[in-house]
Length: 113
Image 1 (cartoon, rainbow, N blue to C red):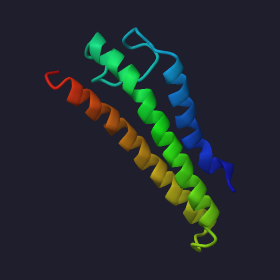
Image 2: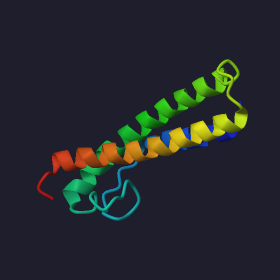
Image 3: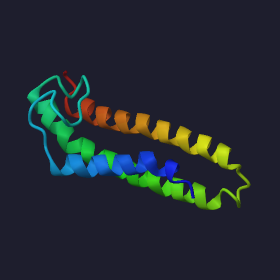
Image 4: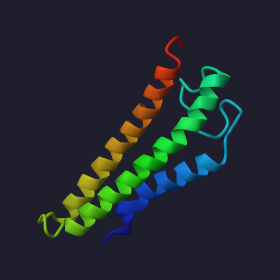
């Protein structure tokens, strides 16, 4: 098993745990910072509540996907280089999905901003 494949899932898991334990109250400081989350104190605090859960959940899902692909790449007859490309692509897609899920929750909660 190639440890490089697990860098992104582990990073997301650790980030989700870290953000879950430490709420950042100051806008623009550390924490989940996007243009929409910085629009008001209320959006900032809501983003700091929602983002860690989504980041952690997607990190765990990505970790499981990586394990499955790593275990079955010989069964599926996938070359290790192709496996890396597949997993890196999935990682990138998951980053976009994670961002969009958080932003959609913000837009849903604050439709007038």
